[in-house]
Image (cartoon, rainbow, N blue to C red):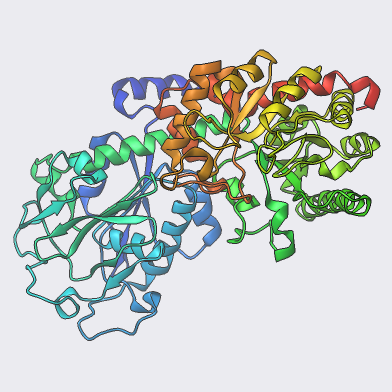
Length: 592
């Protein structure tokens, strides 16, 4: 009988990387190849520059299968859009002008789609020459088909005859741009081989360099995303031994390495957003299974941002407190929970309802997304204490005691001129929430209600979506004393990504959110903080505006040197610890 010898590849793998330590766990960079005359080709400067910067180049040929394209994106850490021919003006919704040069129909559709899909997944992108134009068009910008016939004024020669390894003109870089920081200078000699150029930058981009004649030479993201496009060919210089353009590739590989690290971390940890308001959009015929532009949380965006779970709330605006209105509020809450369950059932192969922390980990192991149920505004229970147990049996894991306005439970952080706290009925509600294992959520509660609830509750409490008042003076935010009080109680505060809770002088960005996180961590420790985005309830900031961009927050945490353990706690570990404690205390009584 024939026998087969088996080999352990790991020792050989280790030996290989010991010889090339700079490429151990190196980022994989997909580079679009040029297809012409039946051949796929790529100038050596592209892969040489990537190798020298510490990456592994992977050449992407033109092909038509979108499923393969999507699968490919899951295996690269950066995308380099290379140079080549003109872009078909039909993709610009324009007719061709006579000055248009040769079109490559094999590349246009694929690369435009590739750029959009990569941007959705937050994959770092570097566009070179044609690549800057592809990136710009794919994301909503416009082009000149031919600068010589369409741009007013006297132009430089933008297609040099000399060797590509030498510069032919200079560009002026904006002093406050990312490109200026990368290159360390604001006047840069470059080469030039183009007659098409960026006209208007895509939304979320800025012009960061121009030639002396005003032609756009570089664009970059204004949303803290790793996207940069240059009109010249930086890859050509290295072929002449000139490393003047290596800072561009070093930056690109650093961003790709950061993205790769964040991806690996998301595979290991559970990522839970403790508050989203997507059910508010149910009346607008949303499709949770698609990348629906009307909402910020759907299956596609959760997958793109590598988000595992969210707590989706049945939100009730505060209305009249008559018997009829209270009955209607309870019915509305039940209806919204029914609709969440129906939405999940329609997508049962990809998502499921989770009722306890163990369910979240089980679903992640099974490759499914998870949704937990919450109620925003205790108005939902009316004046009937039995409704607490009713909603808990339905799987509701937390309930905010109020919203914007006082109810029968307590006084709100807003529209509470009387300064009301927790009522006698509210005290019974909190005790019943403790008994049934439902988390007491103090986001939206007034300051008096907050301290009353802490005194009443026998269990730790949470704030599912709140920020720091010391950094942004808003009544919905928590003072330092409130933050300390929650920590003493063993609870957790979930950072809200609503711009108005982060700053008031301008739209907030991801750096502002991290500053709030720093403040809370420095004040009460990393064991008492998490993230509750408030997506689809006005939450969303520059750089972290929907579920697809949540991996950007992880990248910022890594950049700020938070450890893997810290990030695990922030991304749900702390919140689930409190949930487990509260649920465990009532498990025997409630029967689950």
